[in-house]
Amino acid sequence: MPGTVLDVRVAAGETVTAGQVLGVVEAMKMELALTAPYDGVVASVGAATGQQVALGAVLFVVETGEEDA
Image (tube, rainbow, N blue to C red; front, side, top):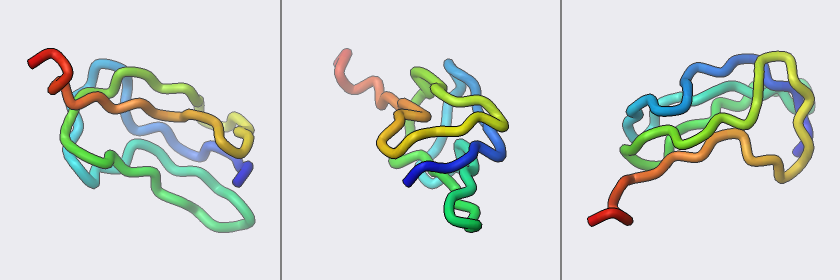
């Protein structure tokens, strides 16, 4: 759902663990924590605090690094 980015807690290149909060979005007057789906490295951050984001926007990309193995 469309919303507003309230907080971005990681940067590209940062190592994250499964369940770690990457950022927070407000949509329909609710705050939604966006978490890492698995351990990995943040490949890209596609949002900034205060930015309006559309439905389906990619805000964070986390890579496991297993593709290189």
